[in-house]
Length: 284
Image (cartoon, rainbow, N blue to C red; front, side, top):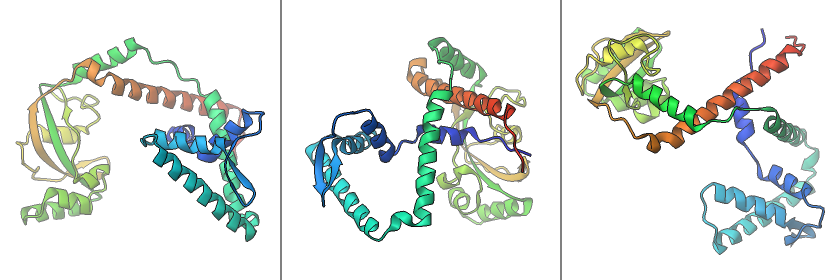
């Protein structure tokens, strides 16, 4: 059966822009002979290449300065020297290089197509405000800062509990054993709040069995037994609890708007793929 393309992959392609692709677009946009910033063995590094490298450095957080521009020029010169050395060994004909060139061309083509084909709806101020109010309405009086360790089976979870009783720290064991994304952070999760009595689908994406156990704990306590959910077992600890703190709308508006934009791009991407599937002939 055909598996739908993950829209996260589309987003990654849509967001990525290489120096090479920027250079091609900048060069195509100009009919005049490009200005040269350096010439290496008769090969010019034009201004468009340098400008693209500078834009990428500034976008990454660098500050424009004479030192930065000098370093970028040196890097471009070094890259051209290496390219010439590789070309002298006829590496352009290497199958691995040709495959990489084909992939880069396809990625650039897909990127351009997605820019024009994905049509997300605009995110209005009213929609952001509504999203904020819906989140606020879903919060309970208390919020909780938890840690989890996710393992594959009950025996592993009980082993972790035994090691905790023997004196090992939760963070250390999370880094060693947990399969959850929070493992690198010692199992630490973000603050979460939910109304009681708890209901399925109303626990801020926190699994209901874990939420039911979490609200029974005191800060510093570990749940005595492993908690099973969705084919895995969890060891749960409550680090802190406090009265729910609701940030002002203006404070969180930019983050909420970004989240809604991403959701809208996800929706538009899925709609695009679904529409293409209607007329596609796929065999596996």
